[in-house]
Length: 123
Image 1 (cartoon, rainbow, N blue to C red):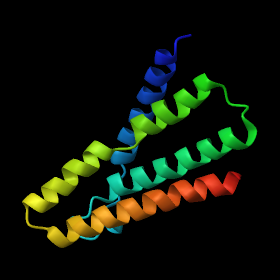
Image 2 (cartoon, rainbow, N blue to C red; image 1 turned 135 degrees about the horizontal axis):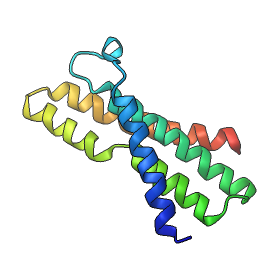
Image 3 (cartoon, rainbow, N blue to C red; image 1 turned 180 degrees about the vertical axis):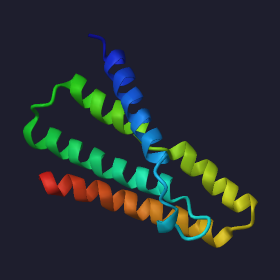
Image 4 (cartoon, one colour; image 1 turned 60 degrees about the horizontal axis):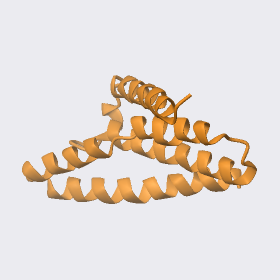
């Protein structure tokens, strides 16, 4: 099968999983206007892509098609950088500068830490 198919299939599954997570009411965890669902989605996606990367490096048993399916497809469809960017812009437009800054910093820091955690759990 074509590599395009694996990316297409994984992307659809990742986007569907992201949609399901968006339906969960996490407002009790949120601090005011902080976009908690997108934040959690990106942190989980970062963790998963770290795991997949380490598994692939450690054991190389994943086929190139499976790596495309998991990393480019599922993780690419699941994570939401464009939504993160839009929400940050929206916070800035509304004058919520401190929330926007905290959101950008926490998303970047925890995203990178989640990749590292997933990676080093396998390694």
